[in-house]
Length: 171
Image (cartoon, rainbow, N blue to C red):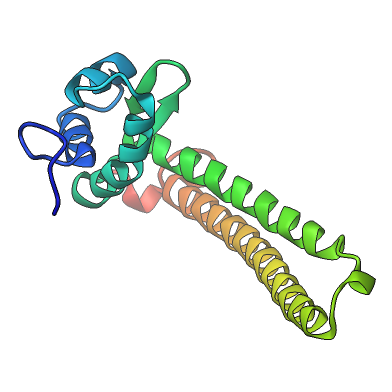
């Protein structure tokens, strides 16, 4: 049956999560400390614990972390989350394009009829996925432009064209 690897019976992810949850934004949790907390010298255990620990951190504390290469993990400030999300989105788009390129590079002459049918289904799926992502990006850009335009218009109405409040609002 299951035997806990730690003397206190806690899972590795829970140990890492508890430490990250108690860390204020902007501060670093170093690998050396995490290794000590996990009672190991195997960094692979830290890396294996991080996905669940960070998922729980995001869910319960509305925080996230960034890897500081060779050092550890920094707890992000709230205003840094969007930048990290954008990085993930950009990587995901590159991965989708790479997957499509791999499918396109297939030598169909080397496939059986059944394999070609599977290839065709995957290719159609990749095409639809790329189209959806592209359409979504265009719509998002349009919405962002509209929001910026509306924000600028509200500011103009609130301050007046000359940068001062309208006369009716002056006291």
